[in-house]
Each structure stands twice: as structure tokens, then as C-alpha cells.
Length: 102
Image (cartoon, rainbow, N blue to C red; front, side, top):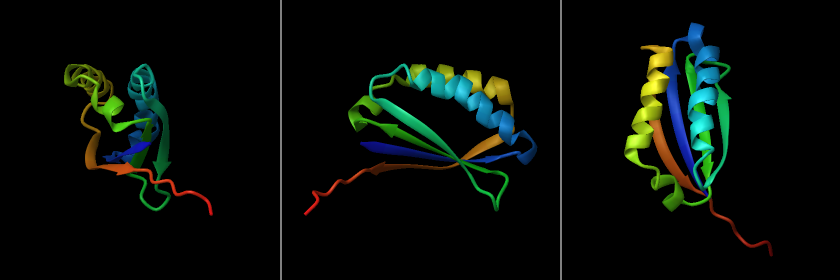
């Protein structure tokens, strides 16, 4: 399993709208692709402008097989819905390691 981490700085007054629009636009779109497993939204109780998404993919190959043109269309729709109220501040990839139980 591969984890995609995306951290955003969001206008605190638009945070709930940001989360809702993300679910309606991004999560709905990504769920149609092979390999998408789940998505969590983490909010920082000490920083109301920080929103982190944890997206789980079955394999890196399935995640990276999504066409850039498809991502651009989804991103454009999301940007139109929210305007200039958010900024991506961190993007990372993690591989989940599993160890046998002994």
C-alpha cells in the first residue's frame, strides 16, 4: 500500500467548504480509478487553517497511472468551486511496510 499525503493551508472561514468540495469533487473522481482504497481528512485543532489528506492507494503504479490531463480537469473544477482560498503546502509519498508477526 502507498500513502499520498497532501497538506493544505486553507482560509479558516472556508475550511468546511474546502473539505466538502474536496469530497464531492476530488474524492468522487479518485474513487473511480483502480487502486484507490480510501481517503481521510485530518484537521489540526491547533491550527484552523491546516487540512491534511491521507489517500491510500493499493499500488504506486495504479496511483501514478492516472493521466495528468484527468488530474488537470479535476483540479480545475476544484479551483473554480473554491477560488483562491487554499494553497498546497506539502506533498509526500509513503510506502506502508508490513512485518511478519513472530
